[in-house]
Length: 360
Figure (tube, rainbow, N blue to C red):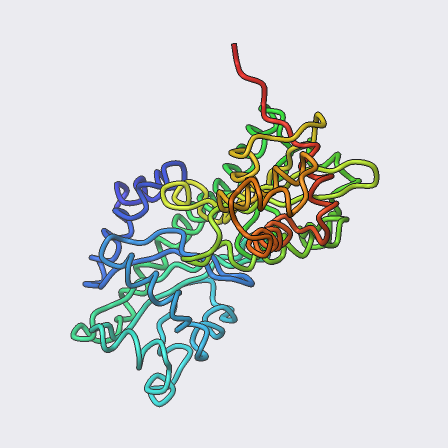
């Protein structure tokens, strides 16, 4: 066994940035096309991949190729505590019809794989995959045996990497708590990965569900939360969503902040942070605050603030130099984006928002 390679594998457990290079080294052992590490549960997430395989692995997930056929389910169902090849779980005829092979890998010049799975305490499965070029032919049994020797080290390191991602999510929520903000971190399916004590104490606003689920007591706010979760990881989904959340005697504003770009590299399994901010002193808030909190257009923000000061639709139209119908259209936009059903609710909501005090 190459002790230097084993040391590199364990280094990845605590320095995940080393995984792409280590996967590349392991892939070269197979004369292969690259290696990648995934987590499979209700959803599939690529944790990391060797440089040459990264874009291809992302494209395979985005295209849903693995879920279309039988290969993935058979890999996940395999009882062998070691590496397997596609020919251990599928016949040649089945491979010819497997969408991942037929429509994606083989047109890209890839012909075979060796793969293993590791069960996580979260009931998810880690999947470590190495692909081989079509010209190299199927993986030899001697190669699979060599990878089986390395598998315990790969499994321990990959498991540690997955757990560290959850730990980073927990630290993120605790950092927000230090700033005085109730918060939790969600994955792309809306599962709570971490929550701080401030949000755990908000029983008047938040319900904790089975299987790490969360919902708002306020049904209208909960629907807006579900809508945000559905679109949060889509390329053209909302950047930040803010909406009111009503409790029994008070209200808060929920902010759904997506975790994207380089932040996604740090919090691999995380998709968004949910932050709750209190509704405070009764005054009409600045236009800029209203616009940023609720994703309003500048015109909608001005209309919303004017409503909060007691202006009627006709007053706003006269001051703005537009028709009342134009103002009514803007009011409808304000109602939709704030989750309110009546103008009076908008007034009540905005009358309680105040900017943060300026720092000395």
